[in-house]
Figure 1 (tube, rainbow over the protein chains, first blue to last red):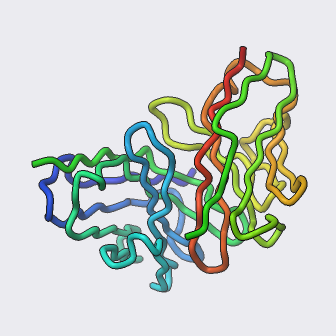
Figure 2: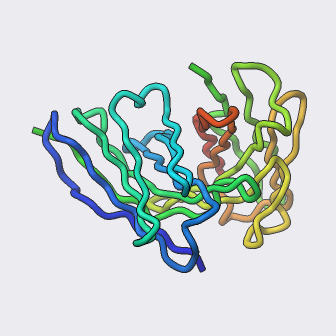
Length: 117
Length: 110
């Protein structure tokens, strides 16, 4: 059974850089797209971007200037960096697995990140 | 900026049938959009239900089905159960990127 687990800070100050890690267990990190998705409190889901296991990336146009996603196949982890955070970046951040065959199938439980001065 | 639109809310009676739809601002949704559908209950992560328009995951109950309907992606629930009350989101893939979620449909079973 594939499992994903997000980790990182729960509280940040404006202008800081958010760094989150997703640990993947129960399956290989190869041959999949590893994605980040967020959900502001009480609102809908927003796709942030993905990294393919070979390192290729694509990001949401609205976040592209602030986002970097990286992968470490040796540790079965991938990471999200979001620079210059503001209170508008307050959200539950989810990591998820996607493939050409099964779409976006497995999700982490999510981590709430609050940006406040 | 591509916008994907879902019905904000729908109500269905237990045992009834309801169809949720997902429309794209770029035009008709086709099989090339590989529509995915997700269910989210309060305080939980989304759970995948449907991939590539009409395929159920191994864990998805048979009462959930996906299709294309009038230029939209559609999720039909037949024989609705009380536990189906949840938020439902579609996800459309536009080439390599972006991937765009719909705004979600709040389904009430009443």
